[in-house]
Image: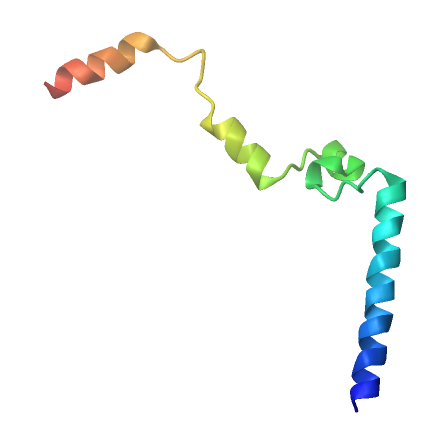
Length: 75
């Protein structure tokens, strides 16, 4: 029973080691992000984080007087 567990642990350890060597020598991680997919970019599909970041940006074309006017009405 213990021999099977030891053998399994050794095999899993060797596999993890070999996968790690492949990543280290490759020096480039695959881009699994949605924005890294050319087909999705052509369709205009982006990730939620990018869309949220764009939505939170302040609009430089907004009318500043309107914002001031609303503040004065509340007082």
